[in-house]
Image 1 (cartoon, rainbow, N blue to C red):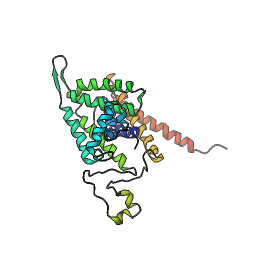
Image 2: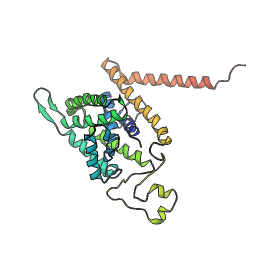
Image 3: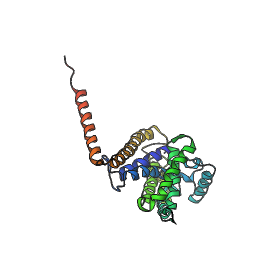
Image 4: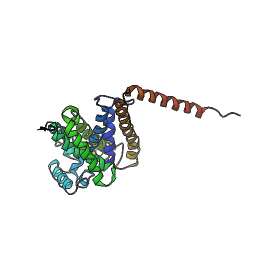
Length: 288
């Protein structure tokens, strides 16, 4: 999948898992601020497995440093779509986020600062902002947004940001699943990459699922950047936008003293009534 599409899927996945708004799962509920910030972090984490590629979106976020880092990661992971695109790679990225969350510094003025979580959030949000063009085409704007959020994370993380490993693990998993749905597939069990037998490689359909190089694929999206991928990512992006917008609205309503869940629930009911009425009117026969 393309970098921006990975990021959009990561944001949508976080909205589905962490938001309690209508049409979300709410499996790991967080505050409205956590939904917004977590969507950016998860979007950045959904780009992280491509740190094994010199020309990936993540490599171009802060050149030349980011390119050097990607070259090093690629060497350790065995090249593009190898170690970082496996179950082991997801576990390692999640472990890095967990360890970063425990790296804190005590200060007299601000108390305990979550230095590790702040630095990790800085990188991931910068990746997401660059991929999604949240700062326009200027890399400086993307990093300014990331720096502002990372500063807040550094101060608030000891009490507010225990969800960081969840967001990183979810984002990395979404990336692997996304590439699993393309023709190239992924080496899920890396470094063990069993090759299919000869009869499997000669059988149509089967050879596309378990590829000759050992990758596993369910290529419903075709090649990266295909029209099927675009067809999938449009509603995914709209869903992510809905979740973030709803979280911002909920946070604003709560700060004003309103019951955000009740207000948003009523809005959804009214919207459903309007859609149903429009459908009835649209299907009604014309007079005469």
